[in-house]
Length: 222
Image (cartoon, rainbow, N blue to C red):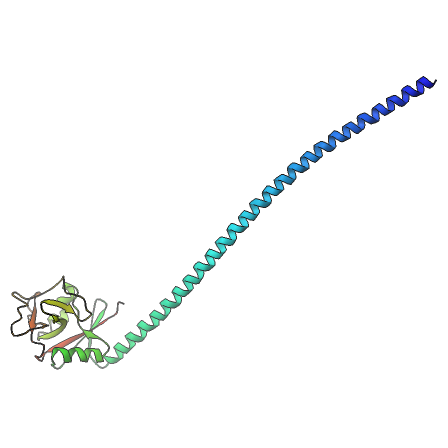
């Protein structure tokens, strides 16, 4: 009888041991799965942190770009205001005069005669300057060719003999429209005029003290 009871107890303990072993094994598997999940979450967290850092940098770069564009916009607006004010001043100086328009410029042709320097001073008082001829189209435009009077333009070599400069300081290169054998500097001729109106090549050098008509130019391009 005792042997039967002992066998039964042994069998029951063996079953409990096996159940505990199975539970232990299952817990080990769950632990490993949890460790894997933990590791994966750590990686995802690091990836999210990296993405967050990158987005923060992009945001800061965009903010910097926005600030720079805002400054540029404000500078352009101020420049536009300055240009508008300058143009209004120039137009007010000539509002009582007859203006001609050609290729982004307005032109005023005088009704009296002055020396080259006096002519330039008159243009400056109007907020402009003597005409600078930049193209063959401007050289032969209808109102200049139709004027048919000897007229000062904004070109001189008073600063350095033989080096002709426009009134904006640029050296004359091309195009240029000197008449044949001009400039010849006969009698200290340091200022340029339009002399021949029946030819594209119509410039002549003349004494700056001679009184002639003149052309002022308002350039709309900045």
